[in-house]
Length: 250
Image (tube, rainbow, N blue to C red):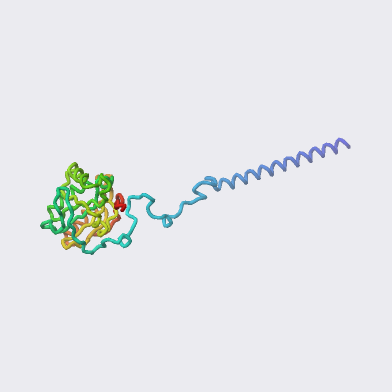
């Protein structure tokens, strides 16, 4: 009888252990299934989503893209009549828009010696001038940067024009009075005027500063061709891409 009692106790204990182990196994499986519902883990994109595009705040700090609107800049708007100027060219002559014979329009371009973006567009500006100046749309380049920087001063401008073989006037903005009137903020920054000096296009030259062969939209040339055809440029405004103009610190 005693042996039977001991045997029953052993069977009961074994049954208890088996049930306990089975419950622990089921619990582990359930926990594993719960984790599998989120396989990326607690620090992945599944839990921390990036902000939607509407929440992104403009171009990053240091972006070469113009950040202000025409109204915020305070220069010319489309349709405004640009004031003429009389600035010193690298050959020593004085150049005004009125002094250019048979002009049907003017490609006023603010550029400089040292900005990488300006350098990338120098050859393209030469080509544009060689193509369109004979048709009545010459390039008129103005360096708006402060001559305090020797690399942007008049002597450096003369050297740069000679090295690159500029076929257009390269003028110094003496006293930095002209670029604020236009509202230029980057180099290069283009203002296409018609024969009455009305501003018809403001912005960048094309859509690829780095690679001429990869350009898909020639904004400036499209605007010139629109004027030639008696129509309005579309678009008539793009954001300038380049280096911020360096004002005199005084």
